[in-house]
Length: 229
Image (cartoon, rainbow, N blue to C red; front, side, top):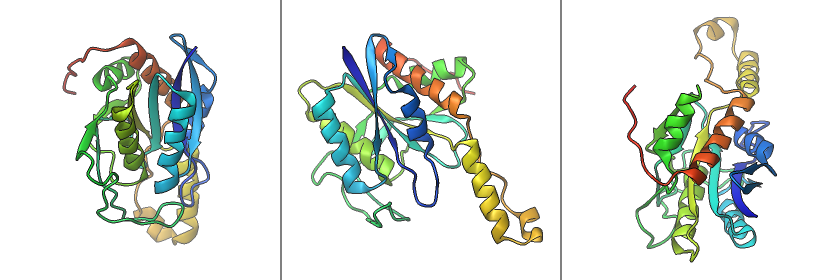
């Protein structure tokens, strides 16, 4: 049976969970359109993350690869359009690395397009009542590092399976934990004037969204035009 590789990340920084791993783990072993889902967790570090992905590509030989990451502050499932060839951190990864203006692949292309049917995925997600949009930037942190490294590897692969990256919102429990942590640090007056809570998405919805993304990626080869909202 052909396989689909889904990856999510370990918890980052002081977070206790990562919605990307929690969601893809729920899909591990499921069969979608005749393909078995294989879920793997990545470290939230620059070097180790892409080395793991390359190892999984060699050992699993998937027909489709979708890497998934957390995007705090986003209120939709966002399907990434392009990966860019740069690491540029304002914060350190879980290994303490904080590269600045460093190419991911020396001499590599400036960018790679996702080969997922990104607009079809978004259209079907919206039709299913799941907030979604196409994102024009995966950032310059570990998520983009993995996205670019994946697409570079797929471009050089003889099989050339399709691949891409999807960002998902925080889980409600992460927002609640952040709220509690913030309230312990600030006096009452500051809490009243503080920032509003970050948006979140229930795990069940995120899992459903990723299952749809896999299904549509296996089913669809044509592009669609999205209506403006």
